[in-house]
Length: 410
Image: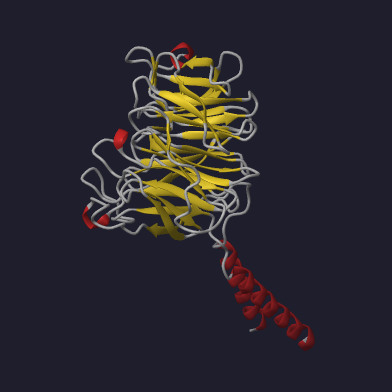
């Protein structure tokens, strides 16, 4: 009987260990932790049946405040999340219109410098809006009066240079598309109407401290059918190198997402489905490091400097909606996470705990979202072990008692 009791305890410990999160390697697969419902701003603002969240753009995670900011066009606001909670929103944008070029908010970005902590958000009518997020109040106070970049359509995606203290914003829908460099501390336009020769559209940009310049995705360079590429924008407002993918053997891409890895490589998301994701070395005239055909049809990309992993939105080779996690050093896909078959084109990561925030639109005629029919932000991560340490401690104590009883009886 004593042997049976000991065997039973050992068996329970073994079974308990089997259900704990895998810790054998440096990467532990992510699972869905929770979904965060998004309240409707009301019928006069949200035009969707049931107040559904079906129109949104880019999201941005602020590591200083550990808050996630989502451009929510359905509710004409930037929504704010932390952990597994909806905290509130920043209202007053154009909202969901017939065309994305006249909708807002669009690109979002937070900037923390010695003088202030600012949320930048693009809106329709060529407006860049700013908010002081030094405190925790929602909605936050306005930082600067609305900044008009001098175009007709929306201000879209953006990037920040800490060394130059400049924000690069793009008017992607104007003809020609153009960029604007804004002083992050004053809101003053430093260089305006920056045009990349031959560019049709401008998408996600990134600051590259290795070159001391910005890089931006360009969906098309020149005539129709061109696969697009990446352009360099310097802090003095001039154009540096233009890397045309047609010259690198890429037939189709339409670049959208763009992030910089610790390796110095740029990862470029291709908007065209059935193509690839491009890993680009921007040094010299530019060269292809690798293409990943497992994912395409991308929009926003993210990079986590803590894990040195890229996060890529898009579809897999079968057309299923996913986001992929790609290691910067090996360029191997660590995990492909399946998503509902709806528009899921935005992603941001909390480097503190590894939580991945993925806005999911609600069910529409184009696709059904069984996870959250009215839309939500899905949070992915590594499950917490919960009560596992206490359970193991208790079982260990029981084994100790059993062994002492055996020693006394023998």
